[in-house]
Length: 263
Image (cartoon, rainbow, N blue to C red; front, side, top):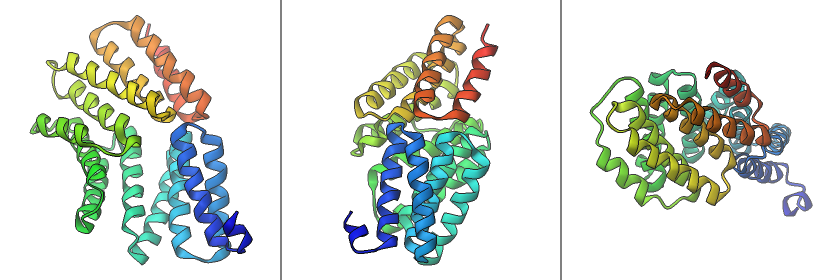
């Protein structure tokens, strides 16, 4: 309202960007998409590269929330270009984090790894955000495990999760560790289940509904590995319910196809 009163297009755009980001995490994908789209249009009208950087990156994230990755990549890469022109390292970090998540879902693990490494580099160079650096280190380890690398220091990763100070990352850090334990070998299924349960509890507590849906999807994958198809169907069904409420249409379609394959 203050930005509107001052007739500041770039200011209104920036505020809509923040509204979009919070809405997406809380699971209101439709509101997040609408706000980021409006932010992007206002940033274009203002001609301000700072607000363009934020708006394009958040709009890319909104497409990830909807489950439409081709469009997400297009907007994120454009946002990264703006960030690099003005050295806006924190939003460049967010963009590479989002891209890493997208490439992980597409099973393009080398691209995922590269994105996380770049994001870590931005923050380490600026000596900024230790909790987010640790979260990205866990994400990087996850990408390595999915590429069949096994030189992972699990003790360090557990420490990173315990040291986290950013509530929105409580669930994702724990889900990452659960994903690592689920895929590193066949000896850590019990530990993986504990960490996935911790992710579910954290995201429920913090109201991170989009993350919560993905937690349940991973929980379903764990039960598939254990051969418990009944619990796998139950938890994947729960993931679908949550993501449908969020408006994450592409994710819902993806998991509905997976559900149909669990007999």
